Length: 61
Image (tube, rainbow, N blue to C red):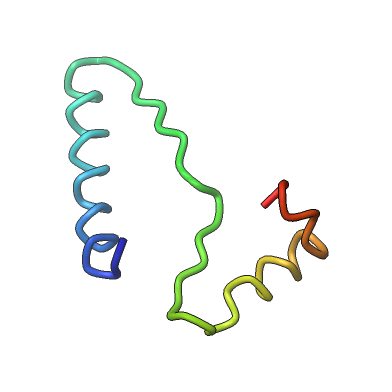
């Protein structure tokens, strides 16, 4: 998903939350706690590895 698509996603989620609220319903959306965005070879994996430690075996990725 590109940057533009991600930017368009935020208002959509906000509208969903507003619609559920207007209906008196709760809207439990399980969204990621963290997102790392960047081009190829920009160091995204390295940033995540600093948070969680080294990578596991290939089958765990």
